[in-house]
Length: 207
Ligand SMILES: [Zn+2]
Image (cartoon, rainbow, N blue to C red; front, top):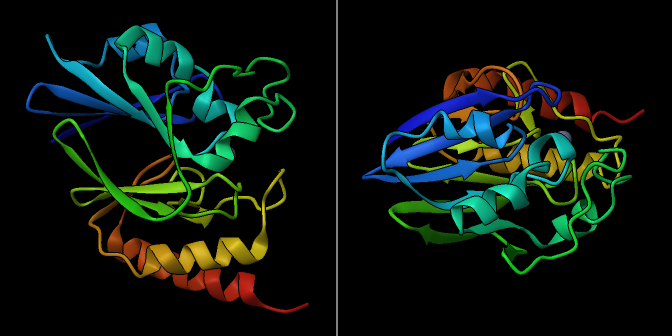
């Protein structure tokens, strides 16, 4: 499996293209469609789009992608209220999804197959109610839950400090080699062991 990372012009969010055996899976939708298309190998078939959460910088172009590639969008069921409300997705009227017929929703940890890709999906709310992390082979895609040196904000709509801590603990309990974040660089399991330990301690402190 190969992984390409595209840095979008929406708050420099990351959009990922995974390719394997002539198929591609897209994670998040901040990059312009024209930019995204440049990152596919010749003849590759896009089999699905996964969303880590519903903030505009990660979901802006998702409906356009799904129409273009004629594929399904996988996301938390809680993403609906973000995508249909530009205040909650922070797009200032830019993103307002009305037709959810291309979506496949889930509300708990699960595993599913999209083309040749095996996806383990973990609900990881805290930064948003609709946060999901996807473990594919040895790479976990966590959206804005965790960064190379830090964790996501919990003060936006639907954010929750307690849930954030629980989600950090969930990721801490998984085995992976690489962690890909919704912004910035990736990090290793060992780097995240230290990062997560420190933030769980810090965020669990009482006033
Ligand atoms: Zn976000």
